[in-house]
Image (cartoon, rainbow, N blue to C red):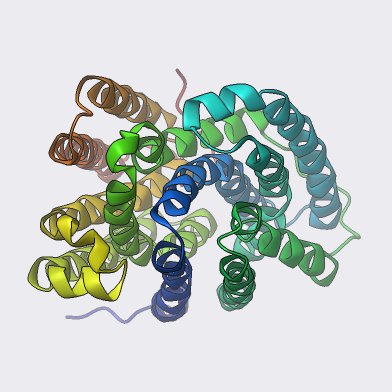
Length: 418
């Protein structure tokens, strides 16, 4: 007999569907932004932009961690003074952002040497780091109270703004400063507009306690998780960096399309107290993610030549044979990303050991094997294949403990220690 879905489960499915559709449209716009850069700038500018993009992904890791932390804090502390928490969070993260962005700028010579980027871009990357500490506050608050529709609308507006700034940058010959700011300014603007509009009951006296240790662990987790698709763009041999960047660009289409529902899943997991409902939400989200990733990768295998011509252009026809397999790598990585959100929601931070091992493995592979595009692609298959396998094993182990009643419920202290 088929069990009738609860109201929460029906709402979650609706949110998944809405986010998949709207998130797919947002992903297409973001993808077109990068395609315009590849098609309407020189190979040299696209190579610089790809290296800068890898740094931007790393600099924006705090945004992902802060959003997850705020979502979790709000979901677990709805009976406390969230109005004061909102403004104090903005102030605290703004101060931290200023401090770290100044350090980053002071180390500009080291950044330029490692990434081989123009020195004048470092000031704009420093601003990107500052904005990464402020921009996630608004969306984290909304996700904490499961305002999924509102978050999707905000993301759509941010993407349109990014696209418009990108068009201006391309009209000015592929201006790297504008391309960098296009990735960070829209999010900053949306938060400054959102915060006064998000209201909580200010009459509640008990203050929300911030767990900075957990924030540090979440940041470290996302830092190591981001490494597989950012470190490669920085370390890859400059001789064929543009070609590899084109492969990576197409692969990220699969990845970002497959993780569109990650924030919805995380919000549901942190708000849901029942472990059986948590597992159902997790498995539904993971299944949807894998389906999207495998479907798009299959299209890459069948229509590889057409995909390359339509997207990055015929000048990159040499990458045709790589995009299908890299698409599968990204489908597996999307599964890993979604699963990591589950681990974070349950405070399973021993997973960091797996991420650390994979990061070291990738760096070693690039140091030893970076002489051809074939070598680099083999490196990434090893990296993403190993990460997927270890993640599945760890996930099955944790789910079996939940099934046997070996884990504490949400709201209790379940954080793993090192």
